Amino acid sequence: MLERLQKIISRAGLASRRRAEQLILSGQVTVNGKTVTELGTKADSGRDHIKVMGKLIHDEPQKKIYVLLHKPAAVVATMSDPEGRQSLQDFLHGIPGRVYPVGRLEYHTSGLLLLTNDGDLASRTLRAHGLPQLYEIKVKGQLTSAELALIEKEAGLRLRPLGKAANAWYETTLTSARRDRLRKVIEKLRHPLEKMRRTGLGNLTLERLAPGQHRFLNQQEVADLERALKKAAEAGAGQATIEKRPPSAPHPPGAGRFRSRGGHSGGRSRNSGRGRSR
Image (cartoon, rainbow, N blue to C red; front, side, top):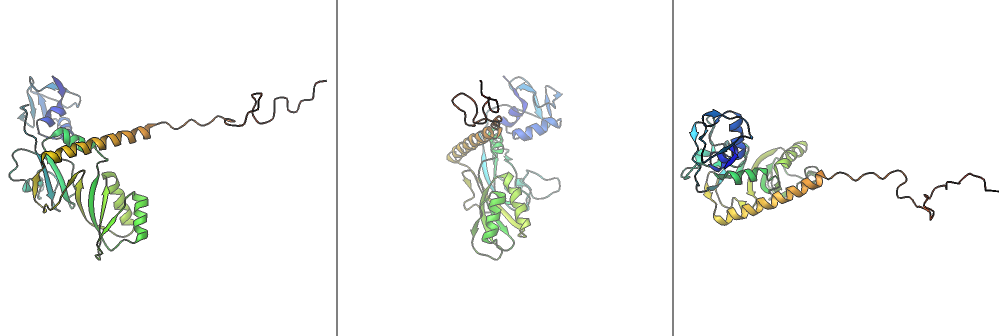
């Protein structure tokens, strides 16, 4: 059966669909010995010889792996780093297979990171922009009630204080788009962002997982994540429908004005200004 190459690659657990597309565009995928660089290319995984970075794909059913890692700060959110910095691979010893991070956390951001060889789930998670993400952030100083109200107005985020330290921690639920807005507003208020930690993604939470530790998701957690993704996708589709709906057509001049029994508008009649018939 013919399928898109990126789907075959992600199903084989070699990369997420987005990463598979990058591999195709960069000329690192071959089909029957010929390099493929077009994203729309299809192949038959049961008949064609497909290689990714020189490795032949064996399109056989494999056990899906789902790992939750507490990424420490100052670690790149990739499996390796050409500059020699600590990467995710340094904290994933004992994983029975190859997994890849679903999305990324910034270098200095710590917290929850999902890794899997399930390319389809990874792709849907990356597209689920409405999937709630719970963060704890630390700023320089303390935010006043007025500043918290301004952040809610300009960034659309509600920050909940976590204690009363000199440099306070706050908790908030945000999406990737609002993260940049939050940074800008906080910088404008002269409360630089000092630390950021993701503690939740959909139904997944860090709980008591220490930095650098990982655990496997159980079947119930995966099923709950699937439901959360479906809900986020439906919400996103509904929002897109609203945004694409054309604006109402403006009323033509005179529309909606009172009309007399004779069918004329409530303005001057057609005979207005004319003399009476003799």
